[in-house]
Length: 124
Image 1 (cartoon, rainbow, N blue to C red):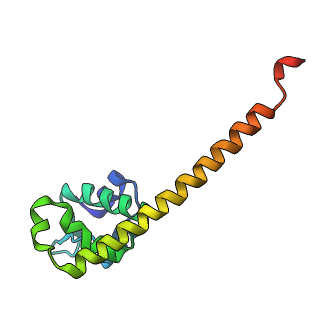
Image 2 (image 1 turned 135 degrees about the vertical axis):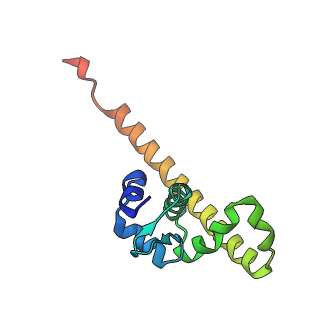
């Protein structure tokens, strides 16, 4: 499929897909006329990229992690330095989740208190 088709299917701009390519996250085939050609696996890959970016990972980390998401490829990533980097990134995300959970609980408490304190509309 062409870049416009992929863009429409995954809901991201063609510009963003080109950026993913520049960052080494996507590798489309190039046709003789220079057009990018994506296979069906590109849809899942873009969704993975979006999810990992949404989780707070950098494109550099994502570039290293994406190949390992395929179980068969993981065996080549026994490099202790790589494992250390990914472990540190995982720990950073875990801490972020903890802080966000605390913020969410505080907001829940606030909303609950406001709703309970609000005068009933049935009183009139």
